[in-house]
Length: 534
Image 1 (tube, rainbow, N blue to C red):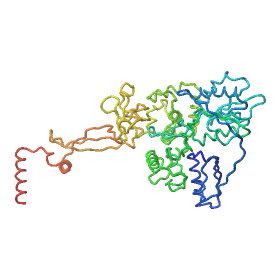
Image 2: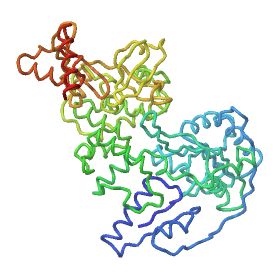
Image 3: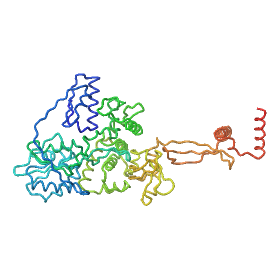
Image 4: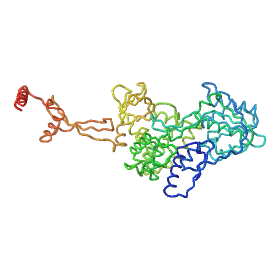
């Protein structure tokens, strides 16, 4: 089994190697493992593999001249990149490979270059969501008499060689998955590349001859870059890893041989979440719900929402909402997710169109078990399955809420959601007790009861009303820390009432009872006799 480009340290690569080592140790001692990388610390991997030999091959590379053209503060990266490309076309020969953080910046840069470069320049985007034909076109050599400008994400950093490229222009940025505790989701975040990545990118200019690498930052900023990108396992939400382990029969991921072991607090949080979503049992084994969730390429919370939505015949709506939640800025930046969902449905931009295709693919990966009604579910009803612990109930002044997990949260009192009794909160910012709600949606009490009925606890409480000299009973319905409803019950009578009074007297003392003056005097005399005579 060959693990190539292992220096990227994706969670899947680390998990795959750990599984392969487990299989080699337990089932297949003859299994050969080969870990390959251009920039990895080979000694660490060799130790993990039990003292495997390290083989180095220098290969053939040509000198690459490094130049710096600093991007102005606040200047959009696509504008700086378009300007650098135009200057490189005028001052250098050969095709150009330009590294940008993501699809959005690539498309904007391509738009800026259209009509601004000579006709013999071919602009070719290259990113993961492109179909195979478009990717083949991007990596193919330029046609005779043409020059090519390939606008690429980190996908072009390793693995592929683009013929004729002798100029690399590096934005110094990349998209990396980052776990956000505030939302409970993993999203792609734009970050600075590591020195290893910057060197890898520059090296693409020297594959077939001497080249030039233009970096859009100051030379002295290179030393401030991290030597290597942090492994994804150190920063990611580990619920997917725990679910994958459970599917392979590994109930304790920490017993596998990882190059960097998964952090214990993150593992504990992942288990807690998967148990709450019914994806794993108390013994850590995967459930039928977990198997269905694992088929979907979205975070665990959203996978649970899509599975539950599909089960009720609303897989399309749930998938659409899941994609909206994972794509930052899609549908605008309103706090109310219903508003964002409405904007997304009307948006005909390339990004929104691509997101709708992604939602359609996600919906197809589920299995409907019944037809939905003519009235589709609200966003709140769907999100209850993703964030049952973040149902929020109004308390006191408008805009102040308490969540089912016991945390407090606030929303601007001028926001339309501030007057709602119940919300489902998808994103929080700030401290646990006074976090600010960044995205949420209204939800009805009936929808809460229907979706989370098995999580709602009913409790009967008894108390003594000293004013009315009677025992009172009431039933309370709770969802975590929330008291959803409270109603009086008929008072107990006879021996049951006596037991209630005795229990309360033991818990709160005899002063609970309505003593008359004569009775109080008698108590005092009896207390004196007890103290005097024993």
